[in-house]
Image (cartoon, rainbow, N blue to C red):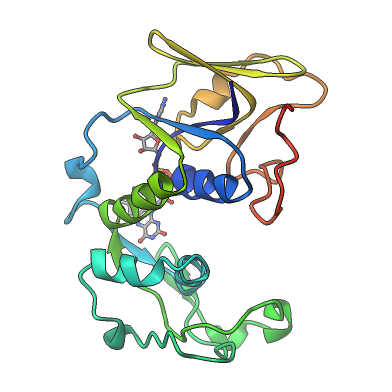
Length: 218
Ligand SMILES: Cc1cc2nc3c(=O)[nH]c(=O)nc-3n(C[C@H](O)[C@H](O)[C@H](O)COP(=O)(O)OP(=O)(O)OC[C@H]3O[C@@H](n4cnc5c(N)ncnc54)[C@H](O)[C@@H]3O)c2cc1C
C-alpha cells in the first residue's frame, strides 16, 4: 500500500512523484513503456522547448544544471547564472502554438513570489533528457518506477485507490493520473463524494508545495 500511485512516467508524473517523495510520501509510478529510452522521446522527435518558468522549476530543485547537461547545452549560452542573487526581470516567457507571449505584456506584480535564480529564457531540450534527469532524481528519493506497466483500470472507494496494470494491482491512499491523452483516469469508476484519484494537472492534484504529506494513511 503506497501513499500515492501515479499512472504515467512522463515529465508530469515523474516531477509529481519527486515532489511527493520530498514530502515523505511513499510513491510508485506505473509507466506503460518498458523501454527507458523510447525513440519517440529522443531527438529529433522528442525535441521540446522548455520555457523560462519550467527552467526555474528545475533550478529550484537543483536540477537545472543536470538538465542542461543532459540536453547538451552550455549554461553560458542560455544566459543561466546560478550565482544570481535577485529575481530576474521580465523577459521572454513562453509561446503558445508558436505565438510568442511578449514579456512586456506581463505584469511583474503577478510574479512577486519569484525567488532569486538564474536569468534565462528557457531552452531546447528533449523528453529523453527530462526523463533521464527526473528518473535519476526519483531513484535518489526512493520512488519506485515500474516500467512496462500500462494502467488499464483505476478504481476508488472512500479510503483507497486501486490501480490495475495487467496482472499487477497496486493500492494507494491516493492516486494521480499523469498518462496524458486517453488517460486511464478517464475510465475511473464513478467518484465517491471526495475523489481520491485526480489528474495531475487538475486543481485537485496533491499540492507539491506542502511540506508534509496529508494523505498518508497512518
Ligand atoms: C509534437 C509535440 C511537440 C511538443 N512541443 C512542446 C514544446 O516545445 N514544449 C512543451 O513544453 N511541450 C511541448 N509539447 C507538449 C509536451 O510534450 C507535453 O506537454 C508533455 O510531454 C506532457 O507531459 P506529461 O508527463 O503530462 O505527458 P507525456 O509526456 O505524454 O507522458 C505520459 C506518460 O504516460 C505514459 N502512459 C500513457 N498511458 C499510460 C497508461 N495507461 N499507463 C501507464 N503509463 C501510461 C506514457 O508512456 C508517457 O511516458 C509537445 C507535444 C507534442 C506532441
